[in-house]
Amino acid sequence: MIEAHSGGESPAKVAMVTGASRGLGRELALFLAARGFALVVTARSAPELARAVADLEAKHATVKALPGDVADAGHRKALVEAARAFGRLDVLVNNASELGPVPLRPLRDAQADDLRHVLEVNLVAPLALVQEALPLLERSRGLVVDISSDAAVGAYPGWGLYGSSKAALDLATKTLANELRASGVGAVAVDPGDMRTKMHQDAYQGQDISDRPLPSVTLPFFAWLLSQEPLKVTGARFQAQGSLWEVPA
Amino acid sequence: MNLADLRFERPENLVAHEPPERRGAGREGVRLLVSQDGVQRDARFVDLPQFLRRGDLLVVNESATVRASLPVEGRLGEHLLNLCTRFAPDLWLAEPRWSPGKPGPMALEPGDELRAGRALVRLLAPYPGIPRLWFAQADRPFDEVQRGVAGPIHYGYARAFPLEVYQTAFSRVPGSVEMPSAARPITLPVLRALAKAGVRVAAVRLHTGVSSLEIEAATVEAQALYPEPFRVGPETAAALNATHAAGGRVIAVGTTVVRALESASGPEGVRASQGFTRLYVNPSRGVRAVDGLLTGLHDPVTSHLAMLSALAGIDRVKDAYAHAIRERYLWHEFGDSHLILPSARSAS
Image: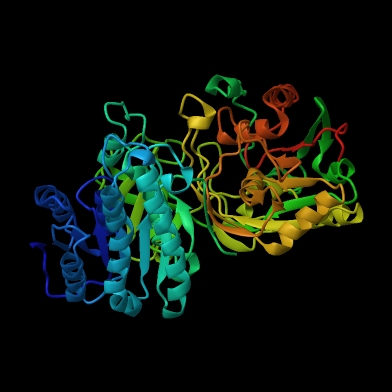
């Protein structure tokens, strides 16, 4: 466990971000830290996570970092334990995702094991993490943010594994929203749009993706989302780079 | 649409530096340019009902103006922080400026701290695609920061006036940092004349941000826009759809109203809607919910001009503006009005 600024006082707000070592997850962790959240962060690569934590520490953030795989039940338990040590959990960002084998290939050539693995990381793990964290989320009347993709609705050739896992996550998020409303917990799906990230580069191997915006392009949306009452937005699916972020009238 | 398409030369002196009531007239004592089918008519604002029809619907903005210009002191010395869009009680999008007449660029960095009265404001990050705007976080609610130290936002061409000068007859819900000015000349006598002419009025809410930003990208469509909070209520949505069903025209009073209504429009007409919108109404997108627009005269290369072009076509807008310059209409929020009507030859 990498630990930083484990001050005695319990923080006012706590967020957990998976896949926080780079790309969107790292950007979100930095923004949440700037907004005063204490953070529990995770990613598979310990050295990359350590670098992200160094950036967070430079901004005087309170961080608990646990490298590991969200598909591992023991790791999920440890993450929630870390949030429990902070005393609460206000925001859970399920961002860690698995693209599947690259270069991307059509579904007719997909291996069943690859499908199982993508679903394990992109659908089973986020749901299991919500289950594990639910007592804390209920106490804090928190918000689950499931990071989706336009591939969930686009039916793009080659994106079948990833896209169907995100489509399933979208429905699971919406169902959770309906089931959890009474307990005060909100759940939203967010399509961040195309961004200049390692995952995007993996999907477009050898191609120039420098015309895609950096993950910071989504900050206005997240600044807005994190200012909303969870129950006002729950059940919605947002496009972070879209032009309209609507709440039920 | 390219940037160059929106350029024109406006003589420096065609600017209203103060409201008409300070020039010895009433609020309604401004001129009205009416553009329809490529024809320009010069009128007085009080003639407005003559150009509208029984069954038309005027839609106004109910947002009221707040004091949003904060004197601050930071690493670069004393300057202004003009609040733009409220995200949370302690988080606004804001524009640091040297002074009302002097914008940036300013060499600011994430993490920079500005003192505003007793409060401390931290700059978190610039807005993606609009480097002049920053997310600014205060150590207390901005309501408290503004109290006592903030003034109304104004620019070099006009001094700051008391806050009531920046309100309209429809200002009801505080939140705009600049006056939604198109409704400013609509006074009670004008409203009575409109009612007598069978023109109805409905309201939407859109809290305006700063207007100081020009299109900086090469094409109109590529320009990033910041979001504004808006609300279209069920009554207004119903009134608008009923107006269209009955063959009436929907006239937006101000570009803010166009943005709100178009944000709430879909294939089934306009629905009740609220949230944040950064919808860019430009010629590529077109308009669906509004038929006409009552507005002021806008500067070259602003996103407002792109919106006008979405409504009337760029050539028609250029003709109207050439006429306005020739006839010496006055620009900006205290200036003259411009009514853009849909073609009289079209079905509705």
